[in-house]
Image (cartoon, rainbow, N blue to C red):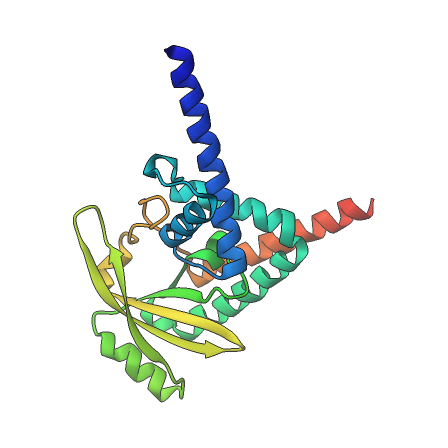
Length: 219
C-alpha cells in the first residue's frame, strides 16, 4: 500500500514537472502571458486531465527561467536589458505619480512580447489620462483586476501605449496602495516593485555581473 502511494506521488510529481515545462514553452513560443491559460493548454497537449497534476504558478515560473536560460541565453539577457532601460526612462517620466516597475521586466522573465508594466499611484485616475494627452501619447484605456490583499480586490484603470517599439502598461492605483504592493498572481505574496532608484541600482549590478562573466569567459 505504501509503495503504491509512493508510486502515485512520484507519477504526479513527474506530471507536474512535465506540465510546468510545457506551459513555460507555450508562454515563450506562443506569447501566452496568463499562467492558468498556459497550464490548461499544456495539460490539453499532454493529455493530462486531473487537476492534481497541474503545477503551481511558481513551478511554471521556475521552468520559464530555466527555458530562457537554456534556449535563449544572451539574446534574452539583451532583450531584458533593453526593457529595463526603457522602464527606467518611463519611471523618470511618470515621476509625479510615484511609479513602480512590476512584473516580468522586473523579475527577469520578460520576453520580446512582454510590455513594461508600471504601477502609478494617484487618487485622481483622470490625472494620468490628462498627463498622457498633454505629452501627446496616444493610449488605450483598459482595466486590470488586482488583489490588494487577502480580503480586497478590484478593477483598476490601465493605460496601454507604445514607445521605442516597446509596449507599456500603466495601472493606476490609489495612493494608499503605495504602502503595500498588490498580491502577485504567481505566489499570492505582495508583488515585487522597484522605484527608479532601485531599478538604476539593478542595472548597475547587471552591468557589473555581465562584465565579470565576460572577464571570466575570456580567461
